[in-house]
Length: 347
Image (tube, rainbow, N blue to C red; front, side, top):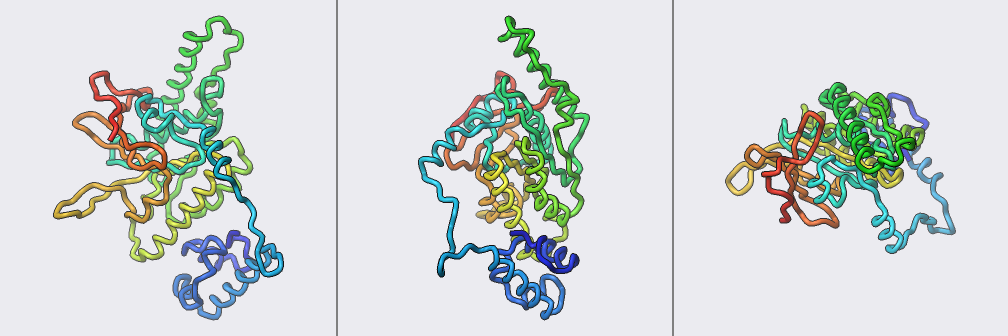
């Protein structure tokens, strides 16, 4: 249950959310003195907030004698069948799709990181377009949510990629559906843009608020099949001195995004920046937010340069081997690399 529903003052609710206390469970083990310090309120006010939260949490439990009834058990066989029937969003690069087992998987959180200029935002926009490819063309026929924390989303670029996607569908028809021209239904580029819900985020508190709002928004727009955050990192690397607070805020966001992916059977894509890490006497590039953040995603893809060529490396997956594949950023969007590049390489 969310703290936004607690019968306390709006200012206290705002302070709770800004400090990372977004659910009743996050308040269950905190002391009044710690809550007072985090929210910068008196200890008496903190005690009252915890009392209200405790009463509300207790009223939500369904009791059977002294034991709470737990719902939602699922067999491993059901889980396997669900996994085998899961759908993917193509990246428009067949080599990258191969190492990902078909593309970006729904019901999972995928983190994509890399250096500036490697094509992270390009890939994010490509996925926001590709999720809309109709099922008759092998797509999901869904819509996208694009959360932009850096101001890097380019609507002109989205239009270019949408135009290329529409043209690809025309060419597909010309090749494989010559005898069924009357049944052709091609999405127009404008329709692609109308199905991308865009949120511009300027502070970490706005980012938390939007992610908390997503469950309600997606409930009202059930055809949303991908949520893209570009980037998850930006506002959490700026002037954050309280690392414990940062860890709590990021952990809360990660749990919400994982829940959204499972609940609505959609893909969550988190774009990430890189930073340097000192290891065994040398500095190495690594994805931002540290080792603890690496557990926030189901899959992790690292985009990197190999000479003048771009490569995608599958660094983490519960079911796939680590592998790398080349890709290119073209005027039409993400595509296969030039023929002379080394193809898929298993690690």
